Image 1: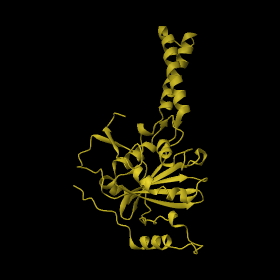
Image 2 (image 1 turned 180 degrees about the vertical axis):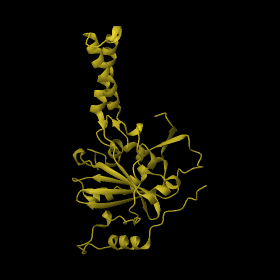
Image 3 (image 1 turned 90 degrees about the horizontal axis):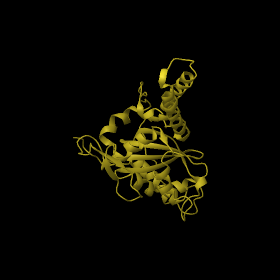
Image 4 (image 1 turned 60 degrees about the horizontal axis):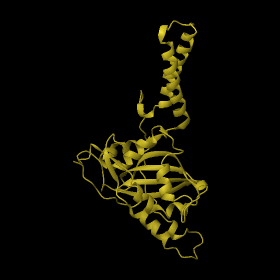
Amino acid sequence: RHTRGALVVRGDAIDDAAALATAGPSDKTGPAASAVVPKLPRSACTRTIAKAEGFDLSTTSFGSIGLGVGLPLLMSGFLGYFNVIPTGSISSLLLIYGFIISLIGFALQYAKLEPLECVTYEDAAALREAQTTGILTQVRNDVTRYRYGDEQHLEEGLAIIFRYNRPGGLRKNQAPTLTGLSEQVIVDRYALVLKFDSPKMELSEWTDRREKIQGFFGPGVTCGITEVGEGAVEVELVSDGSDASGPGNGMEDMEVLPPLMPGLPPRYVKKGSV
């Protein structure tokens, strides 16, 4: 059984954040208090886990499979129909099934959303099983496989958080784009770090929604926000141990989905039911 610990932010990070947050209006060099989020110290580990080789269905495009099966069948049926190759009486069946499978393959290829690469550091991999939460695991699995019909990863979740084209929300053309993710150790805890490209957003539009982001990906996480470049922001989802999904929690047959709205509890469903 794994011991669940509480999240501890080191004192220097808290002191720095407090100094910025209490800066008065006359301090022209410091950001506004609403834009301050403590910078969480990260592990110094630089070694990453190599991607496993071999066939993996979760990272294989169903469109490619459909085209790889359908086009040869369609071509064989076409050539057999004109007696170019001997297919006997099944040429018409090859034409029909080849056309249907190829059509499905083309549709899936058109609608597919490429998976994102997840960079996993060695120290984070060692902590993942004991400290990750069900929702963090689900997010990592969802964005690292092919999706179909979505314009971008976490599309529905971002729409809930940023309330596109609604009072108090962002315009749709300001929407951030998830460009990558990594597994790191932050304040000695497992963390999933989401990297966004948001050139049309101010940093304050991220930090003002920090609690909403934390509630959406919770429970069991603390959210940090770091600007890593012009228009580039990293959202750090640090497991605090209160909702760890490690072995022995009695939920092995359940799958955890994000809440429908920030602040609501996560949704638990039987694995394979969605």
